[in-house]
Length: 287
Image (cartoon, rainbow, N blue to C red; front, side):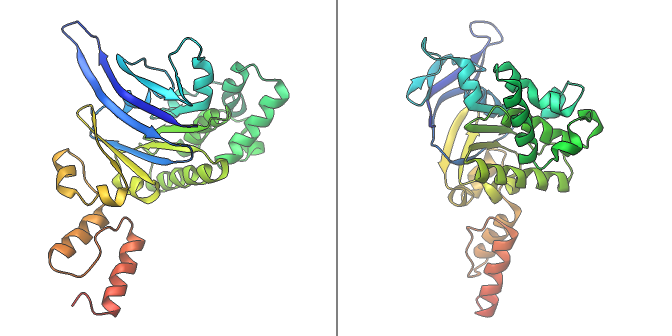
């Protein structure tokens, strides 16, 4: 399933003294199976943009085209769109409300009008997909779980609706390092197991660098660049001017190169940096 964002603009409270242009003239194409990262300073328009992808917000102007159809067209069901494009908000555990984990995950499939047997099947599958044992957690209150587990339950509730696109808004926010790493790995595993299209919104350049294939950068309501993370992170000065950074290890390699060291600077992870430095030491390239 492909998503085409065409000249998308959204203005909050138009024609009032409080009018605010949140996003303007966004063009963005998300193809089936891609893994996108979306970054930008607070207030850059990231959350407003992603809420258009399944029709939670309606454009002031412009279009969202999914599989060739404008999602706000008369012949398109927004309910169907929201089943295809699953959106996990920041701190999704705050939206948990049922007495048990199983009931919470079942909420979406039940609203789809599915048979009880199918609902139960989806609940079990979704919990297993996020690394939780169905038998161990199904009868527990969501609020008895750890923060990371609660977040997994919330994600499972979206997965139980079997979306083709999964949009996650800061899924690691507020988690400790272990919980953050576990959630990121679950997202990677989910993409591979389910062949999902994934859009990951994050403030963490390290998180983004590790796992996404493509990167889009927002600044003051506009999408200022799109492309390969390795290429985008090389423009260090421009990102800093926008209030962003780059992965610390990438910054290190750029500085080494700037000091005349014969190293590659398009490095995204500590593992890549170690390999590059060891290779140069063996070849005495860092002398």
